[in-house]
Image 1 (cartoon, rainbow, N blue to C red):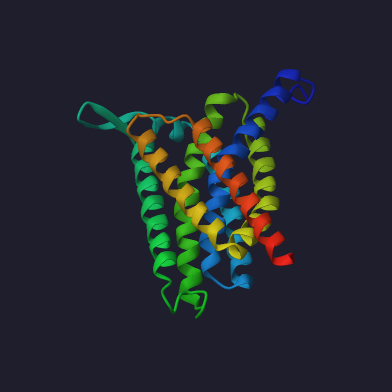
Image 2: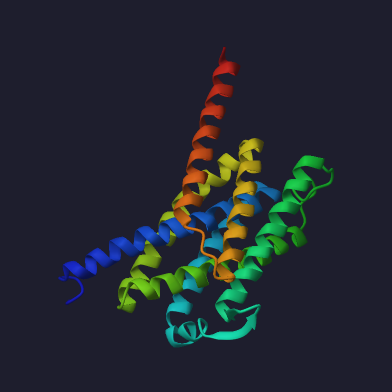
Amino acid sequence: MQLITSPEAWAALLTLTALEIVLGIDNVIFLSVIVSRIPPAQANRARQIGLLLALVFRILLLSILVWLIGLTQPVITITDVALSWRDIILIGGGLFLIAKATHEIHGEVEAREGEADDKPSASAFFWVIVQIIVIDLVFSLDSIITAIGMAQDIEIMIAAVVIACAIMYLSSGPVARFVAEHPTTKMLALAFLVLIGVALVADGFKFHIPRGYIYFAIAFSAAVEAFNVMAKRNRKRA
């Protein structure tokens, strides 16, 4: 009841929810690109599983705050840069994103035949889920450590995470359909993933790239692409 009637608690909830939604943009972009490789029915199921796992991972990580705080303690030093387990996970996740996005860009440019969306299989769906789990863990860790730094009450953290995941779920469907329907948008999303991967690796090595620059670049490019899509539709109608 004290939290419900506290203006500070509501302010913390709104601020943290907004931050979690912004951090969730990366997750939604990755999900939209990765599920485009499998049939629509499987893609919808994979997207739902991925977002459910994102919520579960975030709540589980919140429940073990002491362990999370310990992840920020240095464990190794490389050329005068002390790295914690969090840094190592961010570097690994960033390299995974760069490698995956580069592989997908290469596939789009080469236009290989016989991709998973042409010949769907259970193994393709399985590997999509595995990749979603890997990147969910990375994004969840970064998101929850941010939440720990911004709020003091576990109830506020969980509420913000649940609200953000619900908004991610509602927005992921339209984003995934838009990416699947517009190949140029998919290429743009893959380029965003490379950019996000570089930012994660930089964060791991203690070189922080302000997320505002990255999200502004994403928003500007997305706006340009939206105008491009509208122009194509108008030309077809004409």
